[in-house]
Image (cartoon, rainbow, N blue to C red):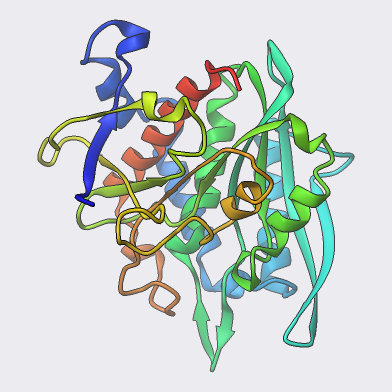
Length: 307
């Protein structure tokens, strides 16, 4: 299948093809871009030791996430932000901990959209720290931008901000969450998952899952890309276009297996994927800011939908 390049359409909301669509890409007033970059830099620093599940680095990252959510006035989903779980892999026992925040919806508070990103990474191997700036400090820091956005925008649906643990060890945190959701799983209507959204030399952000709900394709329309001005949002990697199938590549798979619609945002693998060179200096601030702005803009339209 030929790759289809798309940009977000807001025609149904504003009655034209300009203005708001540009805002979707360039308006970072909804969050502080500089603060977002600081969070990526901090979470991907050597001090967090690659954030491998069950390590001191992961515990430090978890405390950082909870402290930041609290500072952004996000309440915990349960009695605390933490959802602990145990699992084993290759005969090793692990203690994982998801971090879960809640924003109550205004008119559909019993229906939940889960916005997720995993915070764990590969840790230390052979004395080298795998800092995981793009994978996935970029996604976690985008969660903070969502939190900041919700300080000024009240969603209709309730929103769970989920920083999952154990993704690199087999999606363990999201699997535990979807089997122990705290809220009724039947009331979770959508997952928006972010994993590696901080850099792309082609200025391409992929979205997977557009076929998982009948209303999703109305979000987008076909248009030739505009060079160097707008982020190119590309549908693909969904098992139908000859590219690598990403339906099960990250935490959205745990929702997909429960029959919950999802949209997964990520970039194609780069030379630093799962390498110790995935450092903050490789993040592309302009692309990253556009990507997060675009995802938030898409969320705003999704929040107006009925599920």
